Amino acid sequence: MKTVKIISATSKSQIEDTLLFKCMDMYSDLTSLFINFKFILNNTKALAEVYNTEINDPENKDNILLFVHDDCIIEDLFLYRKLNKAMEQFDVVGLAGIKAPIQIKQPCLWHLMGPATQYSGAVAHFDKGSDEKRFMTSFGKTPERVILLDGLFLAINTKKVMEKGLLFDENNPAKFHFYDLNFSLDANKLGLKCGTYPIWVTHASHGLEQVTQDWIDGQTYFIAKN
Image (cartoon, rainbow, N blue to C red; front, side, top):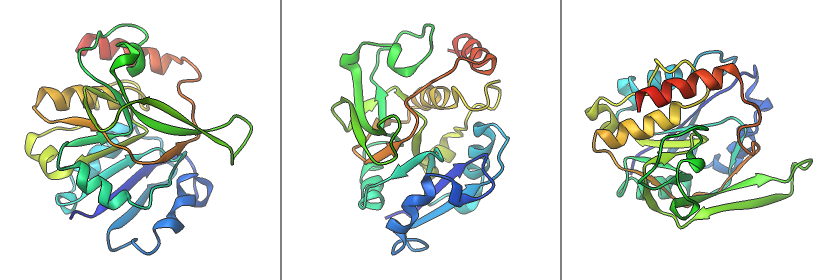
């Protein structure tokens, strides 16, 4: 069984100000034994750069690295066992994604590049205006092998990823977008398996809320690359 190292990059200066911090008490009995947290505070770097630093760290070779957004609460007491079980089937694991074949087209959002019948996974969200009431967005059956994964929660079998030389694409001009889609496609091209798994997480974000120039530049790069 591999240790799970949770990595979260945040613009906040205190971990207590992140939503992710709220779930740390749940894992207090496991922390330092099976689950470790690492917050990158005051972050302004691209997520691809932050995540690659962890992948390239030889001390992480035998860990499962879990990259998760700071506005998520992981609410699954079986996280450690589930991720280890998931890695028996997949090399990259997420909560939601879409199965092949896909059509890369604008707008490049994972759920718009194929029909809903190809969706897989589930993520909970907060009801707007509430930090308690939740609803579950069910995309489809899980676990399933997929070609694209949503980046709110990405776990990797670090040893296999390192062996294949897979890294997040730092040439992507969008700091906080498309890193997940590029990584998913690059993983598949290298013969690594991406898949969804039923792990219960609440995400404060409901998806892309504003199309910025940064996002548009990232989309242009993503289309040209793939």
